[in-house]
Length: 95
Image 1 (cartoon, one colour):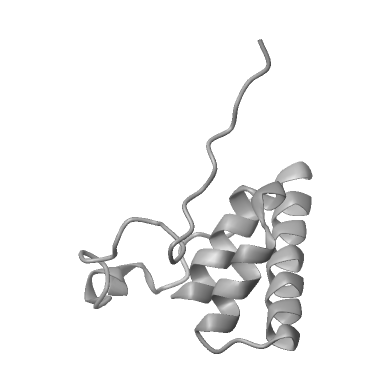
Image 2 (spheres, one colour):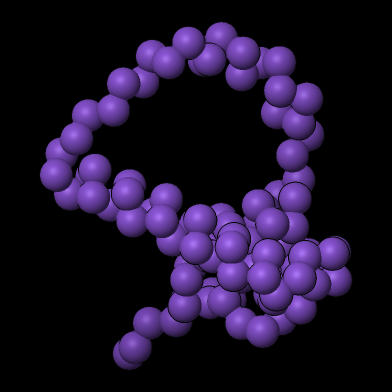
């Protein structure tokens, strides 16, 4: 779960990643090489999504798994999206 939270935050708020995030991953067993791999996979996925979106590529949404979503064990009891003890820093706007 820590890795998924990190990946989501990296995707939505890349400039908000700090050493605390890496320390949090280390605290649950990920090592530095794992963190590098996580960042590479997230970056590649996001890159490919931006390319597809930028070129207007329509992806096939009927892949045959949609009916299995209700069987996900964590579907209804997923906690709020907070990564460990670290909460996202609210963005401020210049006055």
